[in-house]
Image 1 (cartoon, rainbow, N blue to C red):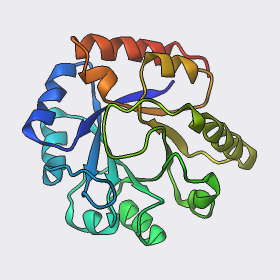
Image 2: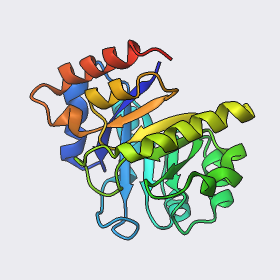
Image 3: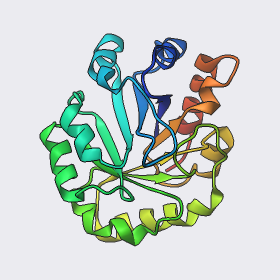
Length: 219
């Protein structure tokens, strides 16, 4: 069964209020961190990750859409056990960044943009707990799901089982009820979802509906 992580655009007071909209049904959140360099957008409140996680008792999936994720990891306090994803397209020392995530007792992951070929991440796979397929171009919420990434999802799933890997697979971008249904029979572990939850009249009810949908998916 896949898990849904409602997605926040940084940790401003306005974004934190969204957590209240889906409580007590939600125990996990996806948090986007952007630097206005890697993507043309910037988030704030990244210094509040531990505080918010503790106050709301949530499990964090931290998505670092930044040019230098190693710097962010050096300065940020991140709850132990969090999922931490950074981009293969960044300028980071990938192995050192993964090492830093593990030192923080978090789960290391790579995110890959729609136009990036899967072979770019193959040298890192032995060191990863999860891989995130971006199904939109990163930087802005509300974009439609790019169906051209589906062959990449299939390729990653096939590679995983061909080589006996156990990493988890996440999808981030444009996911809604129809996309969950489209991907229902694929081996996907995590969905990051923002607009399809928080732009609805009743985010709590919509999260429950989407959760019921992923629970009903056959794997």
